[in-house]
Image (spheres, rainbow, N blue to C red):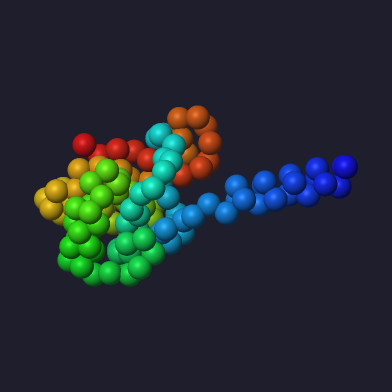
Length: 127
């Protein structure tokens, strides 16, 4: 019985550790935010200001066009900008402005840390 319990616990922890990450691993800035859950579109800005949409490298104009198309099909899906702390502020602000200009309303920046004290990625919403 004890062995079966340990096997069950092992599989439960394994399932929880298999979180789906759509972006590329970046060194997130630290800030207090709200823990993000559910489906979302992830735009990644790496340290060289290269852009990716859900892990797929795209040029800026292609990314804006694809984000507009995806949000047009699912208006409730939020866009999460995951920017490396070494990326330029200008790249993030320009991306935010371009997404807002094409009608994307639900945009947040991903940060490291949360209001609950967890180190899990959380979000800070840009209005």
